[in-house]
Length: 411
Ligand SMILES: [Zn+2]
Image (cartoon, rainbow, N blue to C red; front, top):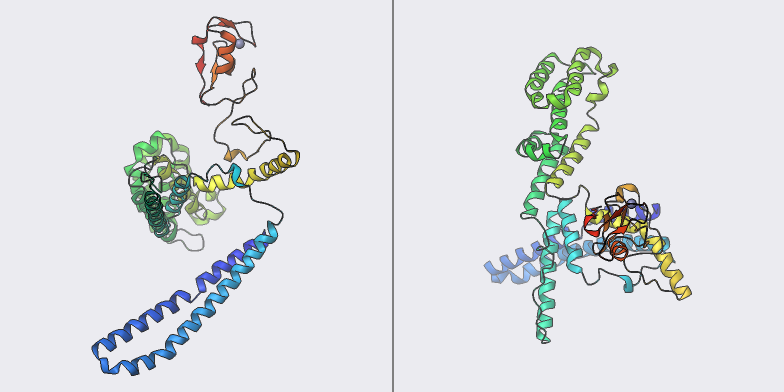
């Protein structure tokens, strides 16, 4: 894997250093200039064209040389990939549930790009996906098929309005936080959304204030010694800014204020860890991202990233299963259920599953888990089968109940 990583970095590095685009631009510029000069003085055409030859050739040579290096890097990368994944076939199309759902995949990629702040790439992708959809539709119409225009990015499938604007403002705030250590825009955002953040039990508002306090306190410090003017400013800031947080964070506020008493050797004081700002910027940035996404009703991590990682973990046992099935000519017919476990780390598990103790089947939306008044839970189908419309005895305890008394369990 390290070899792949190394080659991948080399390809990126190569792309960054590549002169292809600059060389192409230089050719375009020279040709434009020549056209203008010939247009303004047609008599100079011959001499202009002769003069043009050498620099254009040089630019072409630059371009070819640069492309050669890039291609070499790509070949090495391809070789490293082939070496690592040799004898590891990709899953076959027969179980590719997403092959007919290109708009869902486009949408996931588009949203991922927005989240990463790659707005140019996202908009290019949206344009190209729309163009491809139009071409496909025209092709099908010319073949006599009447196809309705499909939404290529799945915009009508629950993308909140103004998603692009929202992510742009999120990245503006994040850039200020990370690059300029400027907390102001994030604080303004937290202030505007304070009611929603409070409903979620978020700590973001306090985290921002705490960091601002530490920033002011250490502003003019030298060799761990705090300056008197910074201390006064930090005290003044604390008096007003910590006011709304007193009920929930009194103990922390007291510790933060207590740190001032150790101004002469704060680094050795027990409060130093509370004011450690080296990791605080990253922590505040990730908590801001989490809260911002949560208010958009999105998860903190990109679903595409989560799905790909979970897929990479779960794929090996599935490939093995496929190979064994082929070898033994066996097939698995149970719908929505697999004969093997695909264990994932706990942070990749988003909901619990329920297996009916009577039928041993996993619950589904059509066959949900139902709790009887005694507290025991079985699936809807088992309940219907046992009850036959009348009162019935729980299979796990002596209590009796009627089907209407059972409550659906949402996991
Ligand atoms: Zn019971």
